[in-house]
Image (tube, rainbow, N blue to C red):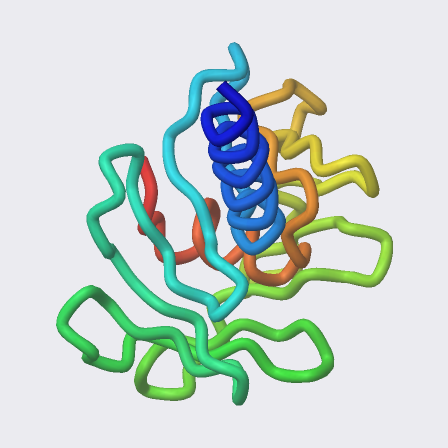
Length: 140
């Protein structure tokens, strides 16, 4: 009996540790639609890799093709270095023409341009969430 208890505690510890290294993306009704792991891998709700955000800001699709880039200033570009939008320090997300298309709050709530909650990306960098949800739509 003692071994079973130790095993259960060990398993619980492992599962808890794994949950620290990835953050779920949810729809407006808290249903999981995907996740981003700590290394930038973007997965759909079924854990299929749909893309990756590399440390240098490069964004790749599931086949390792470069589809964009996040610059240090929050500007997001496509694979041909054309600006597709920007994430401001306050979480406001703008398209290439500086029109507000959404916002990501400090608690991870993702809103559309009319402040309607559309997703939740708690614990995910705002730039990553915007790239995945607004600009490249890696998770639908």
